[in-house]
Image 1 (cartoon, rainbow, N blue to C red):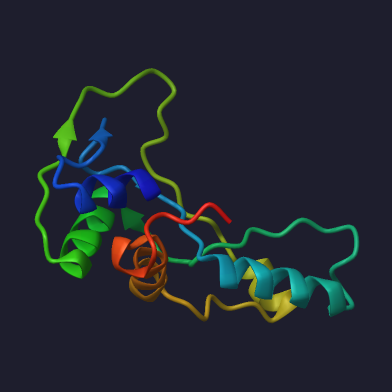
Image 2: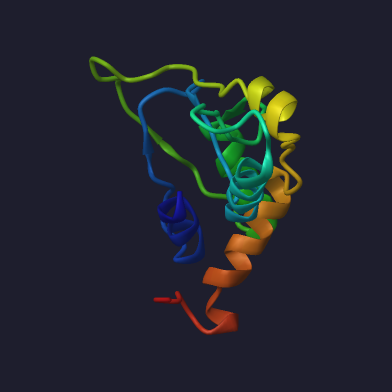
Length: 130
């Protein structure tokens, strides 16, 4: 989703979207690290697979709106027709990660976007390569 921010920061139109209502799973890196640390010590974790995400439905339009608000620049997305096989709705069930690992997404979407934008921001050293 960095491309959406880069388009915002460059004054360009947002990335192309095939559905206005499409949603996706988002996860800030600190949450992924926390889930892995929890899995490393949880008694019930070995041999199991867990969904790890923010645990809430976020549409791509919500994402564009949040980024627009954070950077203070409204960008109009381009909507295209859906392609065969496009996933319309996606929400990770993090119930097992919560119950077995004790995982919760500590960093919510807006805070994660704010941190990510600050990391990519030209005022903090342009786009980092590390």
